[in-house]
Length: 207
Ligand code: PRP
Ligand code: URA
Image (cartoon, rainbow, N blue to C red; front, side, top):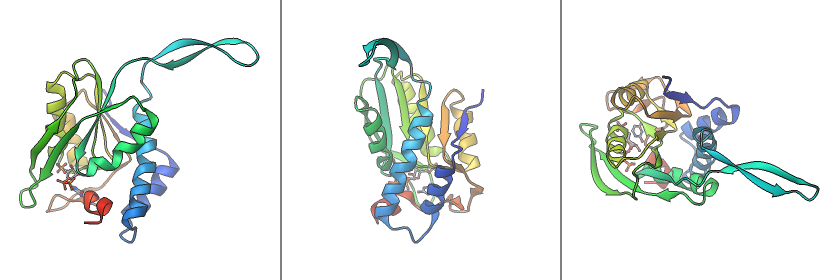
């Protein structure tokens, strides 16, 4: 099964290039992250179930389709994942938002869970969001927590992925679809994505 989905759209390429640019300031960075996540959210939800609904147009009755009443749960990985919440909330006002706090140790690049608050998820559709998929350690831990609560199906939406991280998630969670805006070259010695865009959280919040 093909689980890695690359967003192929000229606007996505345009936005990624401006996100990479070191001269892009936090306010613009946040706007670009919002716009790109909107595109990713649309792509990652194209399999949402719909149901028939009869409506009257001003001219005649017709039957259209609307989203089925099925709960959708969004789980941002704190802190950088917070920059991807608003586009989902704007598109899907009924969405429930949980959170998982994970932080990479600067020396080892290993992620540690420091916070977790999740709504009931058994049998519910969940989308984990984190802009950066580097070693994959953070995403793998978050997906394990979410799947242990019984969420299904579960997807992962990221902005930048390293090949190493994408492969690691595919190995650990072979049935999780991964949606990304760009697949970069590789990780460097410090486990940063190259060319990447630096530390997403720092650039988002100006820290
Ligand atoms: C970043 C990023 C991911 C993680 C990716 O978070 O937002 O969560 O690194 O790296 P990995 O794939 O190697 O686990 P960071 O730990 O810098 O925390 P922050 O979001 O609080 O800045
Ligand atoms: N986290 C980031 O924010 N950037 C990277 O390149 C790797 C992890």
